[in-house]
Length: 429
Image (spheres, rainbow, N blue to C red):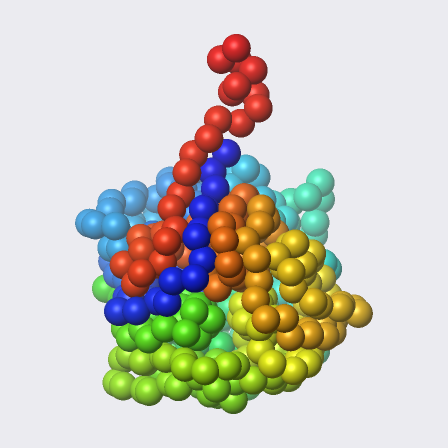
């Protein structure tokens, strides 16, 4: 049983370096299947989700060599099967990107239904419609997605009923080697969608319009190897920005793209924090009290749903009444009960949370319900009085690279401890 122990009350001060983007990495790693030569990927975050994606590739027959903890060379030109093992796929949502990548390269894929954080219903119907429009036959049997394009994939028009990041990425992966032209309308605009397009283009793909709501893909016959550096993690950067504001500290957050953080920056400034932008860094500081704001999560360039738990936590000690509207997922307020253990005053009705000001939070034993909720518990612990113990931290380590080490460098009193679980204790006795 692993836990984070946080003694709150320390102001965060100093500098912190942001790692590569989790959401870009887990799309780019399956994309190497499309290349006929080795690919060198740099600025990889050292997180569980990346490790699991690479294990899936290795299990399929890819040759994987780590140069260092953030650089890997992958040769997937001679994989031996198109089946992804269930044990790995069920641990994360992004495993479904192997469907698009395998279809794009081999015209066949067998991938178990994905796992990941539980936010309620997260269907893949729009992914399936996109694959079918390209000419694939898709079925789900016994929890496995079977996709096959007997006559190959053919470019087409794909219109998404609603903006879907996963669907946009999956159709891009499938369409990049399809014959003819594919046009994706109502496409997601997130930075990691653009990063994947840039990665594919660096291998010889012809993708235009990524970052807008219309993406045009001219299919190519062959993709070559490449060397590519992943963009900085927008959500990791935003988490450290909010943690700094929560503690009334002053931190220079380096290796970021400030434009990707604009919606987060705007809300922080509205709350009373100060954010100074540089070419590849932001300086965040706060003095005095924080002010209430209303937040509605939206697709990029709006406030990301992956920042909602962190903002909700920060708003618990903002003067006045704040309202947070979660417009993306049905069930993303499960962590609120954990914040209530720490003294927060929050009422949830469906997708809306009403947050009443409390002077301070108090340390308590809490759980990380999912990845970003876990980050929220860390922020809560940093600004609370007393000691906070966070369980189920594997959720956090799925997406945050060396979070304890980075926080300790900027003044947080946090440590990770390992204790035997009940089964181990029973065996010892």
